[in-house]
Length: 314
Image 1 (cartoon, helix red, strand yellow):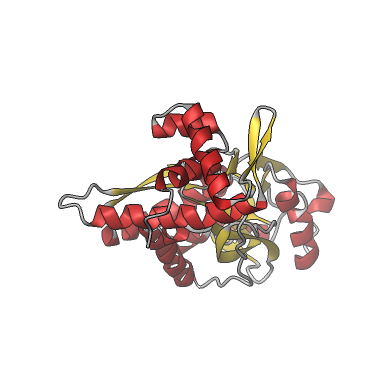
Image 2: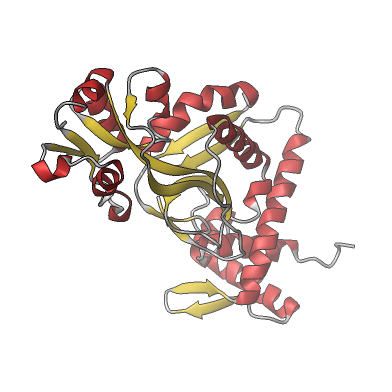
């Protein structure tokens, strides 16, 4: 049934497609770039269609190449996992998650103990660098958790929850805000669409005239710094209901006019289509979905999946 399948060529093709480089594929497979090129040429001849566009200093998948890569990548992941389950002493699985420093510190890490208790053989590594990543080329990252106004139709995605912004402070600062204009704490983030007009929108909805009096404003470049400033009693913070949840639950922060909320973006877990079938990734997706449900914050929509590459902010 499978006797005619060119398995060596398919493996060379998967590596070259994922890395978009014959040289990098050769290094991964411990062969020469010429050998990789020969295997891919033979596969194209066998199939009767071109799989790559050969461009100066780079290669790019054709439509046929994209279709073959996405089915082959997922299939090889499943084969690798099936083989691993038969080993008498399996090594622990590892998983690399890319997300923002604030989400990791304020939401993810406090809950990871429950994941480890359920999956003690899966080792997690968190990558919180703020860079652009192409999941189809960077195989070192298994999945990402992103906060964005954008859609990623070319990735497999699970929408975790939608975010809104409210005003929070220490109990003492919230009590004082009813009688005097507070110091305002905000975040100067790299995605200006998400924070630029937050205070203006919240004040417009709440009827507060604080901005007219030109109050003192304290700005931080990360959400967890802003929350720590609010916990320390330095003012009121405009904050995500997701990221502030642990501080509210512990009583360190309380909402001021909690019924007033400004819509934000959404959090989604994303991976290359097919990778969601890899057992450690599947386990993490399932756990994330459970934790999101426990938070009581249901998403308004689900991101769609499609079979091509997508570059997303790290």
